[in-house]
Length: 232
Length: 218
Image 1 (cartoon, each protein chain N blue to C red):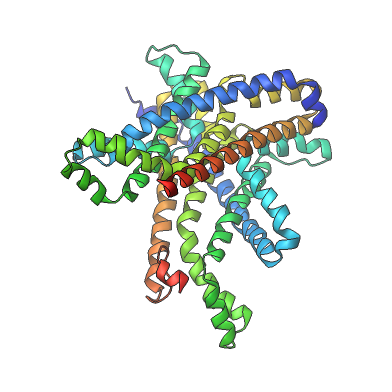
Image 2: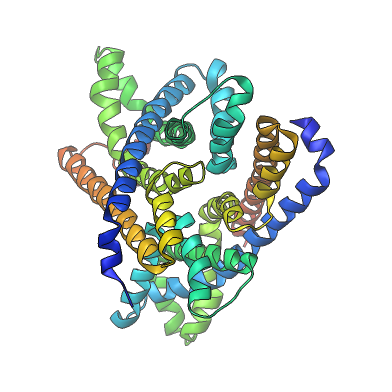
């Protein structure tokens, strides 16, 4: 029933789709990670000026489907003179959409570091920059790796939507094979397995990073869920 | 954007209604199946845990668009003819079941084992323990992630436009191609999704406060 020869014959199309999915996701996630950091930093550094606009941005990302954002960029863009290639629209869409989520993840990470630590650092004469790079960021990294990994996985899965704005990604090429060969199961299942593999890789990477950061963490620093330390 | 909302509101509302019907049906069905799957995942029997784990892994690990296409095209292949809307509800249910099961599983894990042991000692049956002691607490604990899941499903329902279900996104596409105002139309669609989701978040926050209140006075 399962026709492996069909997959072998159409391997070029599948591999090309895989490549497109991978680079678009990579660039999109990179944009989401960096833009999210900028948004979180803006919101935390000046809550009066940026708090409300960034919060609005986050709510818009959380409340609207990525498909709408992609359609706005790809079909709506030209009415305001913004003409994007489908691939670029895909990267931008994933980046803008993911940034809203990552901004919240970073903010949660920064917020969960007890204020006392920063006060103690200042008392000890440690500069704000050093406090940020040596005290805040290492602890925050550890806290944001699990939700960050989750969000990356969500973005990779949602990247399948770029097929609707005519990017030749894994999903689009699978559909092309289905339309050409009238075989539904093989292409879709093979592509599902490929997505599953990418996602499994990201999840494993996340676990490995989490473990590495945990090993480096001195015992006496507040752990998540360690309320005695968080309040102390 | 507001011009589109004002001139095309009857079709937009109709599309939004379909979006809500599909999403809420999937959520409701997923609630039942999710609880059952969570019990399967936490079962003492390995032969039950293993397939449940595989199911969860597949439906959480692949894009929902692909799942939708797979279900929609696979059903006729195996001789089951269904309307696109049924295929859409089925796919969203199968997907959300995996996520809801995980939410319930973590909720169940938060209940102290001593409570279940005490209930068993008091002669309360395993089923009664789950229904009367574990699940009410689990629902309180899982309300925030459950709200997130409902919002995700509402957003994901925009994909069913691909299999020609005339929900909000599909209606917007039709309006955009008729009026040649894609920017305004999709902004209007985004506004409607956002409005519904913000409303849902408000309702959930209200429920959460009420449940927390109930907890304090009990």
